[in-house]
Image (cartoon, rainbow, N blue to C red):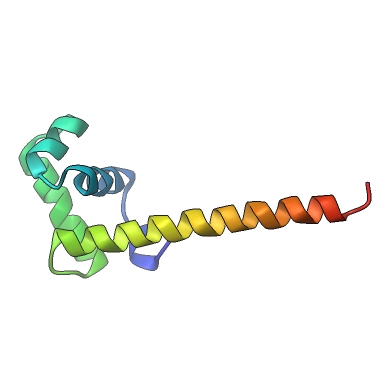
Length: 89
């Protein structure tokens, strides 16, 4: 994942992923069983770690990093699967 994204704690990652789903702090708080102010505190921390101005910008960075991770992971699995088939056994 991107450099800034890798610095997020597991809880910050969960808050960001939930915010992408819901887009509202109150719903994120409900889903993660946190107080709304706690979610806002996590949002501030995420914004600072990713060096962006808004939580929406942080969400875009997170979404791109997650998508890139999954694409790279699938590509690696395909390559290793092809390598195994090409190797005489």
